[in-house]
Image 1 (cartoon, rainbow, N blue to C red):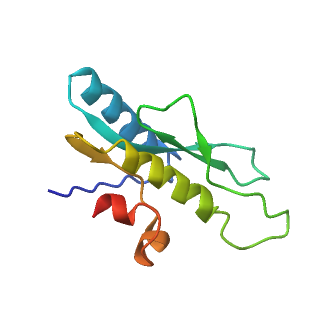
Image 2 (spheres, rainbow, N blue to C red; image 1 turned 90 degrees about the vertical axis):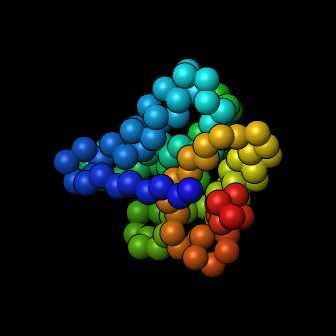
Length: 121
């Protein structure tokens, strides 16, 4: 079974990510074996884009920075695809025996067969 949800982040940026983090924590506390990853955005102020990190469930003390600084005048994607691949590999290594998989959406990477695509399959 595959589920999806979205929230309007216009009023509370990062609320969907916080909801997934609470869900993972509550379901784990209830005894369900949860695997996956949660994205955390770290606000850098009004003049800066946020830093993006992924927390692999079960390895929350080892966040993976998935954004890269491209400089003040850049307009390209800040995602570090190598770091995202590392996060996906760490999730894949923890997948055995999981009853539920939670992953953030990184549509462009999954569309070309990368990111969490193999883990989801």
